[in-house]
Length: 176
Image 1 (cartoon, rainbow, N blue to C red):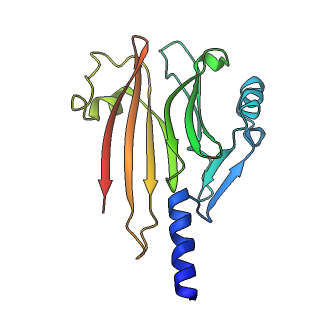
Image 2 (cartoon, one colour; image 1 turned 90 degrees about the horizontal axis):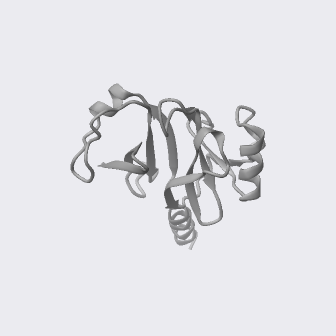
């Protein structure tokens, strides 16, 4: 009976992406965010996930929309889904969400990617390769599973690059 209860609870945690090492933080816990971005995230009822005590890869700053903008990218977790939100130039009015996921992952991290890193991404399978990389992209990596004997761990890596008014993306799946 105990073994069946453990199995049901484990499957429930896996299905909902709940992990003991994931904490949900208020946007105000990130002092580097501009106050108007914090206010917008709070108005959207966003929580910012902290996976395994790592917060450096859930709120990032970079030149994601163009070479002359300073943009913010944030993971916004809500009840059923998590969005990658990008605030172009820190603007709440021009907010974009290049990716939205159901909360079935066990970890998710984002990082700026420079032009050299973008050149090394495999483009062309799902999307065309941009001719010139004149600003940064966003690397996004979601993990699924625990790596325990219950089931294995896999991940999905997506690279986003904004060009000519659209988000280009390329995807790689890794499983073990």
